Image (cartoon, rainbow, N blue to C red; front, side, top):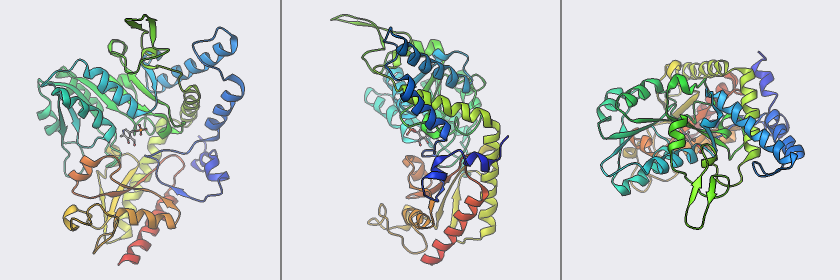
Length: 425
Ligand SMILES: Cc1ncc(COP(=O)(O)O)c(C=O)c1O
């Protein structure tokens, strides 16, 4: 395998953008290797035309690129049947599609079980169903930020029709035991959906091994372009769902009074698809396959272990981090605060403001301070407000790693944090 330094050399952003940035916001989106950028340029240079529609050769070639991409990406997540993968814009769209389409079959009193560590994209679409009397429940966490499995099991009832849970929390970094959750859901007769937005990019994920019924992920978080993502579904289940969007591509026949629909995955791909996105994501998958997802996972385990060692050694007095410290159940996500940023520590006027007071430094100030040292992290609620409230904090800062980050980046993070702490002391 090539060195991680050599791998970083594949990313024009780090070599040609003129910016010398320690980029630690990979849970939000990742930089792109040249191979991905080249694949997109090549597609537009040589193959561009609309897919599935033309009889002429160029259109057939474009269709071929699109369908080969589907096959490649489906294989990457362990699917043996490309028809199990529908292209969507992102994980958010996949989860909205599922809530909408599965929602047709739900009735008043039915329950959907989520976890308190979900991203908004796996909360809000289910809340839309509350209008028809569906109850949305949340399994709690333990004090260490792992999922409370007793609470999960106690909330899994005869009424639970769907369990939808994140594989890896984008805030706590907790890697959930998806296989166990899926087994419990299935034993209960519930559908099991996995939000794999933070796992597919970072670890080997095999839909057969996990036995999830549906799975959502985003291309831009795994070196691919924005605007492309995947919805995996066991074929019978996926094909049995009613469509989400109507239009071209997704139909079999259209009459003035009714229409019939194509089979999955076309049924869920109304309109001209993002062919460039599919081709770019397929190139990203090829790139990751060469590195090996086991190696990606090991690299990130090393980085998160190093982070917790650094946290202890640095002795930064106000530093408080969240989530489990065991790298076996932790992704490459480090979420922290400088001081107790609990709502109780702030008066009402300051709760949602950006002002740092007393012995706490607001995460927005922390992130701005880090930015002055060219370290890019995210600060806020990370689209996980229920979890942020559960942690009794107003916000947090988050450093998230990927294949082009090294221990030196973490050294830089901690040096900068100490500088910021001194500034506010
Ligand atoms: C766990 C999780 N689920 C879903 C999403 C939504 O991803 P996207 O914005 O690409 O749809 C994110 C994005 O950060 C996430 O971290």
